[in-house]
Structure formats: C-alpha cells, structure tokens
Length: 354
Image (cartoon, rainbow, N blue to C red):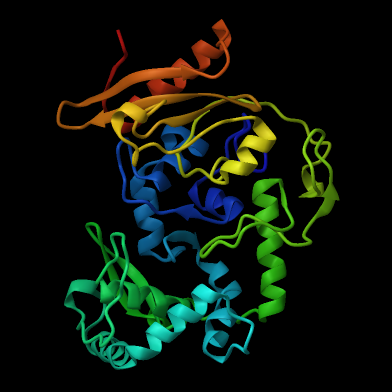
C-alpha cells in the first residue's frame, strides 16, 4: 500500500505520482471518470484536476506510450528495445512478436506511406493517414480490419511514430523524432534491470517470473530481495526499502485498472480480494456492478462501490456498496467521506441508494 502511495500522507503532485507508480493506464471507459484520472485522484485527492494531466502531456513532462502514460524521461529505457526490434536473432521473439513482425513486413509500403504523410503534414489523427495495406488485420475483436491503427501501434514499438497529443478523444500521431526527448539511450540490458527495479519499487512486492504481458509485465526478474509470504507457495521479490517502515492507512476508492489490483492473481494471493471487471458480463451475471470500484481501508481491500456518473442529471449515483467484510462505524464513516469527496471532485450531487 505504501509503495502504491496509498498511505495517509499524500504525494506532492501528479508528476510525483506518475514517477513513483511508473505509469498511468489509459482506458476510454469513463463510467465515473477516465481511469488515469481516477488513479491520480485516489492518490492526490481533490487537489488533482484532469487539466493537470492534460497540461503535463501538452508540455511533454509525461508521454503516451502503448496505452500508458509515462514520465518523459523513462522513454530512454525503451528506445534500445525499439531500435533492435528489427534486428532480433532467431528465438529472441515470442510467437506473437513474430506474427506482428511478419504482418508489418507484408504491409511495408503502407508503413512508408504513413511515414511520408507524417513527415510532411503531422501530427495527424489516424483517419487522415492512408490505408494501403495489402494484408488486412484480422481479429475477432474491435481491431478487425483497423489496419492503420494496428500499424501505428506496431510502429510505436519500433520507435518510428509516437502520440504527439490528442484532439478530443483522437490520438494525434507524428514522427517519434519530433515527440520523444533527446535523452541518451540506455543500453537494453541495463534498461531492463532499471525497469524491473522501478516496477518493484512501485509494487513493493512481486513475483520474479509471471505470464508474459504484451505491454507492461507484472514480474520483476531479480530486482530486490527474495521473500516468502506466509501461506502462499513460491518465492517473491520484495523492495527492501519498504521493509520496517511505518504505515498509516486511509480509505480510498480505486480504479478497476489500478496498479494495486490490476494483477488479479496477485491481488487474491496477497489480499484475499476477489475482483473482476464485470462490464463485459450480462447484467444478470454481475455480482458487484458494471464498473465497480475496489474499496481500500487501511491495509485491506474491503469491498466494492457500484456507482456511475450521470452528468446529464448532475448526479453521482451510488447503486450499491458491497461489503466483503462487515464495515465498522469507523470504516463506514471514512469510506462515506471518500465517496462524498469523489462527488465533489466530479462536481456532481451525490445520490445514495435508498
């Protein structure tokens, strides 16, 4: 909890939060507020405004990389991997990376067309970039035949293009050389160690190895020190700087994409907290609600808040507060104050369940 900046003493500002957490995940769903804003508010309280994030992205103190907002200086930790992606030796790439590489090569003419258009006219939204792909992108999901969008995302991984900003919800694309800071590139092996160390500092405790993730790993290699968690099999890695430090907790409402609970298996193992994002389930199958917010109290995850922001009516509607453990009077009061603060931050009236 302390590593995730969820103790009683709040951090100084947005840039401190992002540097410590290493990222804010971007997600377009805004049932209450966009996830990146919810994460920032849960750490900073109502002193945070979404305009602060917009300003940090506009002045490029923060940058968008692969659906994550990261400190601009951290780009130096990814540039070496970007540069060597086309020079990978046999066996260095996973099966999905080989598939992406081959699809990109089959559409190299379109890739060059995009680079030429951005060079002459960027930044541009994806709809203004030519789709001359010879091999369409096939998917059973939302990205089926969205050739330019997928191509741009792979070109990000190669360090060729970058998100230069946004116009409303549209990403504006430009050549990476115009967007990324001109910081010295950290060698790939050294960068991997630093990323693992920073991820462990953000998590406090994590597994050394875990399932492969396409964007942000959940494991930390050999960073930190080995540790055993009573009652849980296997070896963990712990950030020694977090050991033996005092902790004073508080109540907090978390985004469904919050780093504390994003790895559902880790959440269940460490906190005994059962959570799933149920927005993709039929309404009759939901236990906690369409976009339930995990509820933190002290050092425990204690429930879920089912709420939605009805901006047309000017109301934050609380549909239910699910208690995983019986709330004491102190818990009820502290969690209630946090819900009231959420409504104030959103500039909405609060409507509680009858």
